[in-house]
Amino acid sequence: MTRINSIEIFIVVFMAASWLLGAVLVAKAAKDRGKSFGNYLALGIFTSWVVSLITLTVVRSNEASHHTFCPDCAETIQLANATCASCGRKL
Ligand SMILES: [Zn+2]
Image (cartoon, rainbow, N blue to C red; front, top):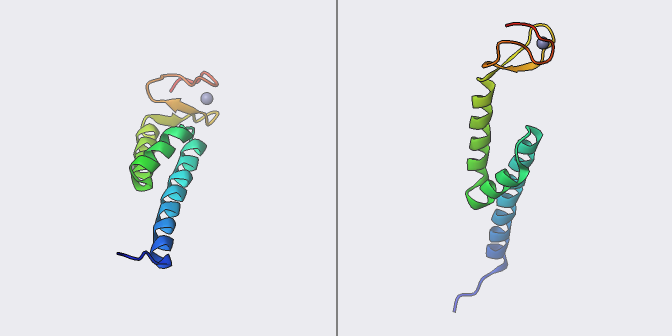
């Protein structure tokens, strides 16, 4: 019969806790960027917070490439728009 010692329990608990903590931290970062906290938390828990972080980074850089800033009012403008929605300046 195998005896489970306390150090093994500690390692398992520590790994589970850091897994969850990572997932929560990435989910919080996603929420700060206007993404769904729940979606990224679920992604982080069911895959890994690393996958969740990569997804957040990729989604973010994709969005950044579709936006620019208005030279007049510094509002974020979608590149598909020809005029600034905030001040009406033509790009
Ligand atoms: Zn503007």
